[in-house]
Image 1 (cartoon, rainbow, N blue to C red):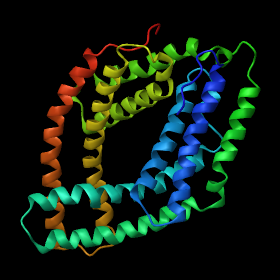
Image 2: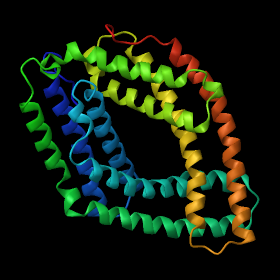
Image 3: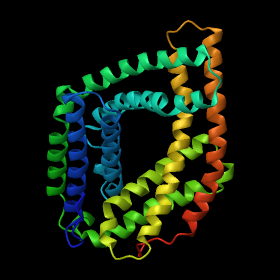
Image 4: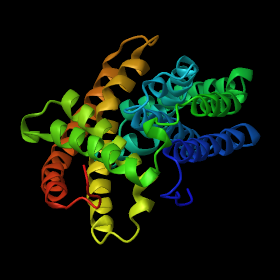
Length: 300
């Protein structure tokens, strides 16, 4: 998105951020409905919705109404439908090829791959259908109207009326502290706790994407962005591997249990566990690098 004006009111900056998120969502929704399915359309729509919710939550620290937009239920339902399609895309396009490359040729994995492909096609059709619903078509316009009305009703002395440059350090600082808190004693953290760290890292990454342009001349900004991106990538990979267990349960649903299918699932789980162990070692190093990297903003 274009750099924000540091002298602009924080509410105006938020409106531009939200507009960029909705534009990202709309262009990919149109792409999904216009032609042949491509996994990136679903992925980018999910990213746009996460960025949208993260932006509202970021500024919601100073205006609670932003944390509960009237269309929150619709956003969550849409994100869930897109997530089901995305999970199968990752499983078929990323996870299974790793397993197949490491496994001996056999019919068990081939049968699992064929079944996963069938379920994926169904999830893709469901995602298309949801994105074509009138309530989703109207979502962007309704959110823009809601935010415009909320900002127009703010008192003259409200924090969001202050210059964006004056508000940004506190917003970034809150997200940064959330990451440091979630990452304490990382080696002892469970998979569920690492998931919460991943969410906190993602929120900080989005916040720095939104507001980092205000600090274009900060010498430490590139290094901070690189350390944060590495951390997010590793946590995201670990999460994709963890999602595999849920995908296997979904693939088992409605299927007659059999030794062949069970054997294939066991192969997938063993391969995923091996990859996860390697990524956990990389994560520890990335976390140390992140902690050692100075922030690029001051004041909070």
